[in-house]
Image (cartoon, rainbow, N blue to C red; front, side, top):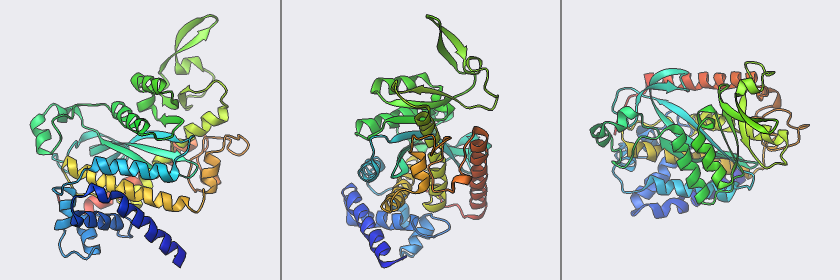
Amino acid sequence: MCVADVQEWADGLEEIRELIGPRFARAEPHHNAVGYLKGLLSAEERKNSWTLSERAGQAIPDRMQRLLSTTDWDPDGLRDDLRSYVVDHLGSADGVLIVDETGFLKKGTRSAGVARQYCGTAGRVENCQIGVFLTYATPAGRTFLDRELYLPKAWTDDRDRCASAGIPATRKFATKPELAITMITRALDAGVPAQWVTGDAVYGQHAKLRETLHGRGVSYVLAVPMNQRVIAKTGALGVEFRADGLIASLSGRAAYYICHAPLRISLAELARVAGARWAIEETFQTSKDETGLDHYQVRQWKGWHRHITLSMLAHAFLTVTRSKKGPSEGQRRAHSPDPARNPAPAHPSGLDPAARPGTHPQRSYWRRRHQQTAKRHHYRARNSTPQTRL
């Protein structure tokens, strides 16, 4: 790393330090939060309170643990600062909001929201927490904007259990698409420039989510299952079909999308937006590998949101720092509506074009491959790291 890069890094961290300063009433927790962020950006293999404390020169992890538990600061306020930071540096009128969830493998039954449920990281039903995330993709980069911890009904129906995990009494059951609506609404209300929303079939088949986007005047390209019921005109009448029945010429492996867009929009542009959905897969992967998204050792609701938000901010810092050097070829391709340059939905990463998924089977293979990598990472960490709980 050259001197100019070191100075750019230092200047960027100073901007973050000043940005989050008003969220802390005292200097010590502010200093600890900056130290925690620096630790998340470090090359430490495991980024938890113990390792980050040692890296900050603290003999014991008490201060870092208090930062995630009892110190008086609001992670939702920090989330708002994160959103402003991302928009200031990456904002674009043709931005794409992407919703998806990721799993965090856990032991025991006391971590907020933990349950036996399907975990995409493991590729099967596992004991895990599920976080629903909103990411933002523009020609300059892609990173996180928001997060919500999913609570199964077994939790929201047991208020004593919720209280023990620090879950607010006001938090009721909400489906993953309902959590997505909450986050998208927050982003749009805050003025995040976005022309599109995309997501997988969990979100695309949810009528209320699509209605919300209609009402906000936001276009979308949302995946749906093959049995999705849709209305299509036959002559002057509207007739209901299954998606796979309406387009019977497609193979059984084809992907289906419901789109809402301006009349004069190209198929290439719709494909570009659909391909942007894969940005969130890369964001999950890089944040788990580089900024410790899944390295936390906390049980409480507050601790989860504090660690996750700090990890998201660390990822945003890396994305913004990278964006100052200009978009990669992968990003330029991903945001080009020209079918000659972007013939298939592209994964907006810096990957070599030959390795980037194109057809639906290729994208499915790419996703499964990355899920396997993440699964190995999770199991290795879970089996080898001492468990310190807050």
